[in-house]
Each structure stands twice: as C-alpha cells, then as structure tokens.
Image (spheres, helix red, strand yellow):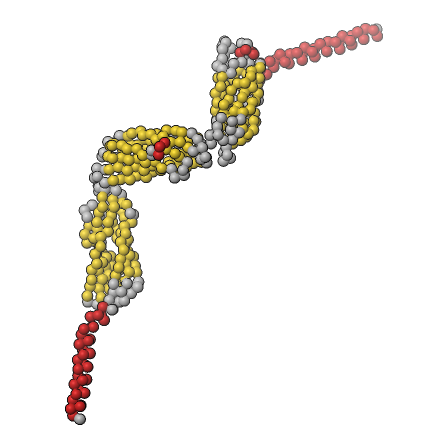
Amino acid sequence: MEELWKMRKMIEIKKILLIIILLFIFTPSLSALLTPALTFNISPNPIVSFPGTDGYIYINLKNVGNDYAQDIKVVAINIDPGIVLPHDNEIKIGNLAPGDSTAVLLKYSVPNSIESGLYRIKIKIEYCQESSCKDIYQYALINVQSPSALRVKSISPTEIKVGNSETLYLTISNEGNSEAKNIFITIRDFSGNLLTFGSDNKYYIEKLSPKEEKIITFNVSVSSLANPGLYPVYIYVEYTDKSNSRILINSSFGLRIREDIDFFVGTQEVSGNLVTFSIGNIGLSTAYSVVLEIPPQPNFYSSEPLVFIGNINPGDYTSVSLNIYPTRTNENETKYNNTLKIYLYYTNEKGEREKLEKIIKINLERSITSTYFTPRFQQKSQTEPFYYLKYIIAISIIISLILLLYKLKKGKKK
C-alpha cells in the first residue's frame, strides 16, 4: 500500500511539473494573443504640389490587434532637402482600442525656389503596450512640379461651319525663365465632331527659348452630321524642363460649330427705282424666318427698309423687290458709289437669331439718269413752301370771284 501511495505521489508531482513546463512554453504565445497591431496608410494631398504652396500628408491609423495600443505618436524623422515641415513635427494621438481607427494630417510647405521632382518624408509610427514599445516606418512621396512655363496663348478661329474645313492656328508661348525641350502638342475632341486630316493631331517642337513663341497649325474639318453648338477641344502640352522632368499641361478652349447657312444675294432686275433681288440659301441648313433689311447708309435708302421673306431651305432661292433711292450727299457730285449694304436676319435650328451682312453693287443710273434723290423726309421739307403756295393762290382766286359776283349783284339792284 505504501508503494502504491508513493507511485501516486510521483504521478501527481510529474503532472504538476508538466503543467509548469507547459505554462513556461505557452506563456509567450498567450501574451501574443493580447497584442496591439497598428496598420496605416499614407497619402499626400494634393497629389501634385507646386512651389509656394502648402500641402498635407494624410495618415490613417487602425488597430487590427486585440489589445490597446498606447501612447501612439506620429513623427516625421527624415525629410529630403527642399520640403519644409513645422518645427513641431510630432503628433501625439494617445490610445487606440482594438478595431478602432483615427486619422491625422501632417502639414508641409513647398518653397518658391524648389525644383521639380519627387521628395521623400520618412514617417515613424510609435506605440506601446505596457512597458514595451514598437516603431513602424514608412515614406511619404511629395511630387513637386514647377509652374508651367509653356502656355497656349491664342487659338484661331474659334468657330467652324458644319461640313467645312479649316486650319487651326495655335500660338505656344514660353513664359518661363528657362528653355523647354522636346515639346509635344496634341489636340483632342471627345465629341467626335472635329476630324483631323489623316488623324494627324500631334505636333512636335524641338525647343522654345525663354519668352519665345511659335505658331503651329492643325488641319481640321467638321463632319456634315455634326450638331451645331459649343464643344470643348482639349490641348495637351508635354515638355522637358531644366531639371529634365517631364511636365504635362492640360488646357481647353471652346470651338463653336455653326450651321452652314449662307446666302447668295444678287440683282435680278432694275426697273426705275424698283430693284428685284435674288436670295438663295447656299448652305447646308435651313434658314427660318428670313428678313431682309436695307440699313441706313450714305449712298442709298429704301422707302421700305424691312421685308419679311420666310423660310429658305438649302439650295432654294426666292426674290424680293424694293424701291431703292440714291441719297444726295453733295450737290456738285455727278457720280455716286453704287455699293449697297444688305442685312439678312434668320433663325437657326437652335432657335437663335443670327445676322449676315452682304455687300452688292447696283446701278440705278440707266433708269434715273443723273438725277439725285434725297430721302422723303428731306423732299417734304424742300417742297413744303410751294405746296402751300398753290392753296393760297386758289383761295385768293375764289375770294376774288365771290367779291366780283357780290358787286355785280349789287349793281343790278340799283
């Protein structure tokens, strides 16, 4: 019995020793199960920084462990020359519970004298658990681009008619203080209305010196199926600056696509002062509510300056007759300028009212010889005294006849 008891005692002692050994073995693993674990993402804002501006490094922290992360600090410990951070470049966050997250902003400045390039800021994240601490390191990249030296200075023309072809003239100017090299200019129209000849929408310039400018051309056409309106055309300029960095400039301009409405105006017949005009729509779009006007001008005037014509479809024509008079400008003048200005007003397919000016030549000398006419209001003022004189004479004759009849009648009574 005593030996059996001793054996049981030995077995219990061995179990206790085994438990102690197991505790020693698994204690670190058990402690690891209660460990904080920080993850973080870094992103600069803005993505591209320019000299003379400020920016922020956005840092998002999350505790993915199962214990508190204590005494969390964010510190910028190493900065490439050129980027400036405030003197107090340490941010204290405090504690972060398991599953929680937070975000901080670390401000930086970009001096005016900095050159283009990528600049690094080394970020240290420090956190503790009871008496032990841990550090995590990561870099933030700051992309700095110098102010754009090249600029699209002017564009001409800014409107093209439907179905027409034009040459676009772009003036590229180097407004910086250093040379720009390997310059590529590309134009793009995402509306699909603008077509470049042979899909040649690129242009290359080897270099532009400071303050130098160059005019480049693109041959373009507008589809006959294009809808009239104002469309953006994008210009991409890519070049190498003095630091051998590639710079990309995006700009845009509005290109107005107009209906192809144009008129032919000619003299069909001249009979005295009555002039018959032929008016034809030589464009590709319908002109609605067409009105013809003879505006005030030194050489001619019309007694009916405005005439409503109506709609004129593409390829159609109509005629309209007006009395046209030459205006006297000098009594000693024996010849006059036979150039007549005509305005044509119409409504386009978008409901907008448009105006076209036409200049034609007419010759009234055959029908009115060398006689000059003045506007009607002037004629009235010049003939007005003679107009009243004939009435005065007629009244005087009537009064005289009445007096004569009265005297004759009186003589018979005597």
